[in-house]
Image (cartoon, rainbow, N blue to C red; front, top):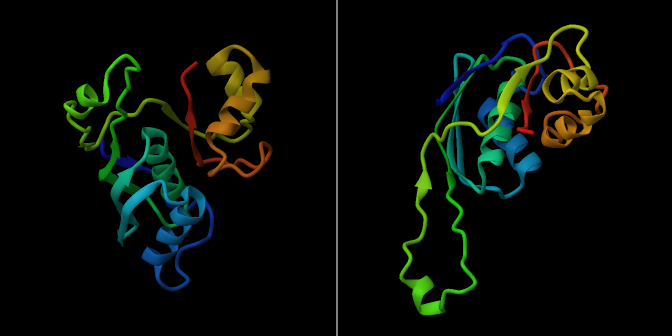
Length: 167
């Protein structure tokens, strides 16, 4: 799953003020810091394409949402946005044994570990939490998973896409 569709006419007004590629790149750098190595962005006809290697699948998902939730973006191609596979260390292994384990390679276009949800008119994070978790008070799980996309729990808008973390 590498191409994600978004509503072009909703979202933050960041594009159309000059260099759109730089605006998207700057946004991702500002919100995600150095969690994406070799970040490159292409933008043409409302479609963004992201390149680079993320530190986690969650960072990849956040990069997709940050880009797609911009007014003027109707699609994000993330097939070239990978993440580093995490190696689980066994404390019982010696340094020599660990050295023999091949280092993980970057994984291309992984399947998402969370679900995306498109905000509808009248939605609240509490109502979404009630639907997904059976408990409206778990809205903070959704808020924390989307901190880069949602700046305040009461500041969501129809058409915005967010991550719904697994229970």
